Amino acid sequence: MEIYKNLIIVAGSGRNVGKTEFACRLIRRLSSQIDLYGLKVSAIHPDEGIYHGDHAGLDVAAGPIEETRQDLAKDTSRMLQAGASRVFYLQGDDRQLAAGFQTVLTTVPAGSAIVCESSSLWQFVEPGLLILVTAPGCQIKPRARAILTRGPAIVESDGAGGFAEIERIRFSAADGWSLV
Image (cartoon, rainbow, N blue to C red):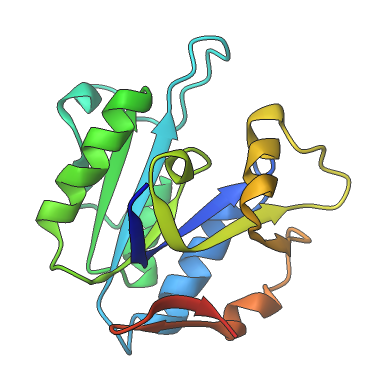
C-alpha cells in the first residue's frame, strides 16, 4: 500500500458525527499558511443503499468531480468556503475509489496538502494521518470498526464546540501531516 504523507483522512464512526465540520475547521485554520486541497469520498456499498449528498445529474462514475460553488450546503462547498484552493468529490465502489484518487493526484500539485473526508479511502492508501471522528454515545458502525486496527487519532465531537486536536495537527512539505 502506497503512503501519501500529504494526505490526511478524516473518517467517522457513523453518520453525522462531525467529519465535515472537523475537516472544514482544519482547512480554515491552515489555509492562510499553506495551499490546501479538499476531497470528499463517498463509497457505494450496495448492501447499505446509502448515497450521500445531492449530486443529481453528475456522472460520478466518470471519476472525481470538481466543486466550483461556494454557496451550497454540500460538504464539498463547505470545504471551499473554509478556504480550500480546490475541492473534489469522488463517489464509487472500491475499484472506482482507488482509481479516482489517482486521478485527483494528477490534478493537484505534487506533495500538496490534501484534506480528505472519507471512511473508505484508507483501505487503498496509507495517509500521513488518519483521524476517526466519533460522538458521545455513537456506536461505531461495522465498516468503521476496521479503521481502529490502523491506529487512528480518535477525536470526539460534542456537536457544538471546537476540536482541541486541530491545534495539534501540523503539515510540512517535507514530512506531511502529523499530530504533535
